Image (cartoon, rainbow, N blue to C red; front, side):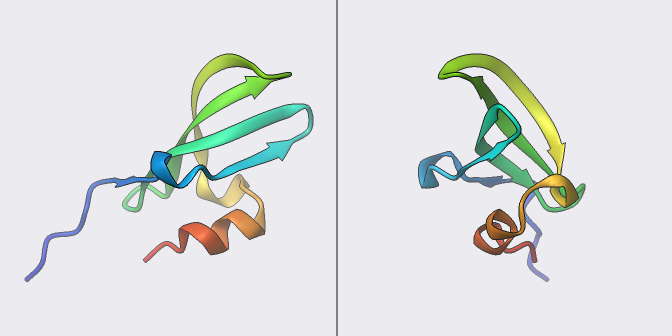
Length: 68
């Protein structure tokens, strides 16, 4: 039986989205916990990394990531 990946690296795909005044750039997706590691930017200034629940991201981004 094939092993499931613990994380999917997405930093090379340059996926980003905006929520309110913040821009989020997707770094990594964890299918087992359904979370994303994202880099947070406010007005082009890096604010740090954050973990977001998959359910809290826009529907267009969910279609790109396609959890399995």
